Length: 419
Ligand SMILES: *Cc1c(COP(=O)(O)O)cnc(C)c1O
Image (spheres, rainbow, N blue to C red):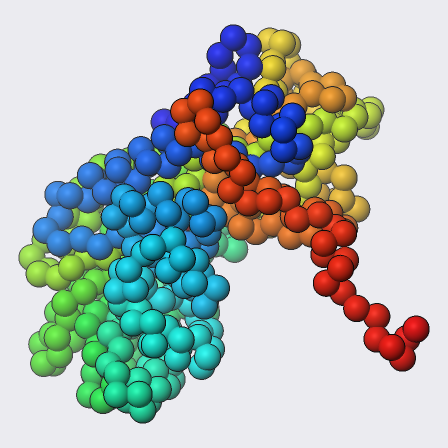
């Protein structure tokens, strides 16, 4: 459920007509609904309240906007970060260092040191080598780093190949078969407090079964590691819960997810950690775009919009679907290709899609753009970096400026020897 609805013929975010935001800020622009974000955060948290001990760390990479993180911090969320930059954002949003989990397959030495000095709550180790390095860095500073070992359970998440992370050939985690030995070797290193295991098999999962079998395997491994005399107090079950992008798509609800987790983890006696990203932020945001013009195509017209793959990369990267709706629909429908202005064929949002009739100058939105949207934006083709707005009831605020090409140009230099 979200708060983007048609009122008196105009799409609104909560009580604000999207036309007002487009007029004031220009397009393209991302718009987040505070009420929707808050609702998703609470529904997910409340669903997990059937479990004995829970820590929820929002996957910052899904939407790292400072205002979004602030809202989630107020809802009691910690953060799952994958870089020093994301860690700084989570801290700037007021999240407690001990509630932050540092994931990521290639944490640099500098990042590990900064995270240690900040007192980050848990490092999710992606290899034995990383654990040895972290232990030495912590020990040299008289610190102890709490850590979990990320395990690759070799399960097929059943999602798009580019967002699958739990197959043996993927770069993430350590192989399931050797995880027990690696844990045992890391557990005795000074400077390291091995406290658990972590798993994350992929994103936009439509079915619970792959997660359930991965979690069950993790339970087996946990028991084996405990039997070998090591302590496990935390189990990090990652993120990955999918959201519907298309009308008619059916996805497991947070309640069904929580029931599955409760069933698999019964008797584990640990703090369960979760790293949701998309399920919190996805439906909380839309991107407004304006139609530049419509031109004839071979089988149907091209609707050329002022947003492009640099502003919303998911269709180009993952063949992703985003619903496209006119901000002021007439009720008529047309079949069209929706494309951006960038000089790449992959700058295509939809082919042969049935959509609201739109013409040059009309506003439209791409729905479900709150996760992996603005955060992936770039300035390819020397375009501006897309701005972000948050709505709260009948008020709204710019929460990220548009960074125009002139500002980016000003950060470039021609060496003297080229003058
Ligand atoms: C990306 C990622 C997440 C979040 O995934 P969602 O599908 O957005 O929930 C959680 N944990 C890790 C380690 C990730 O890489």
